[in-house]
View 1 (cartoon, rainbow, N blue to C red):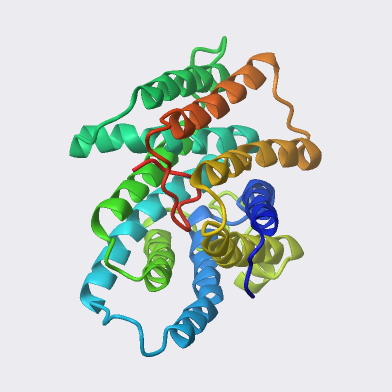
View 2 (cartoon, rainbow, N blue to C red; view 1 turned 120 degrees about the horizontal axis):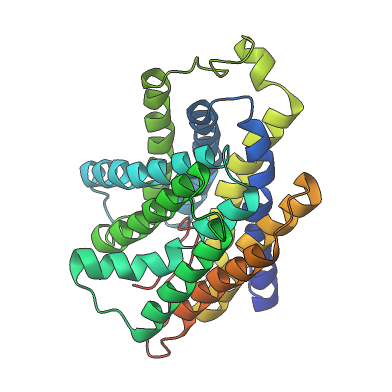
Length: 322
């Protein structure tokens, strides 16, 4: 399918943000009964399979024109980047067991201002003033959202904050090392690597494969083939990965980067709305102020530097400044 209308491209990206925001809810419900690493291993195995048709279509389209692929570099880079994704998705998913979907959505968004800051700390990249303003604003928002009067971080909030660092590290490493690799094969290797790392973690962790230690033992098919589990895996694996990749790829050629960055900022908002509708989660006054400050920090860090447009990559799950 060829997309030529910027309006259609905008709708496609809004659907991506809607899926990414809403999928927090079924994932949150699924990991109440299935261990995080087991869920992620299955979820990303399904995601890998769902992306294979994209590889076939691209190879067919570029037949005779594609450059030779360095498969050793592809696998090494994909496994490294996949490890950052594994850290991000594990801590995000596990963190959702101990915090709210709303908090998880907004704290994950902190990876946006973290990208240029980590780039400065690790590679001494120049960071514009707008980014530092965005970081201060988002940090104040994080305090209001998660601590408030309690003066203590929730365990889940800490895990999701680690997730934001993991996603930020993934974006930095992608930008730094893999410009000469084909994006679809590299994405498939990364996604499959998350499934592999999650499978390894299953056998390292203390829980049985398909249920928690303190839960009543169930067989794999009893756990896996419930309507909730099937829905959560298919939504996150197919719509949240394969469709999202395709939609980003076709839409970002038609929309200016700052518009895409604005659209992506809607993801935590959708997560907040979904949590309110389906889980009866309600932000208090300080929580709403904190969420607003995080959102403002994301937008300021992305859009404040008019001299440099944000660069966006499929599967980053965010807009990122180089």
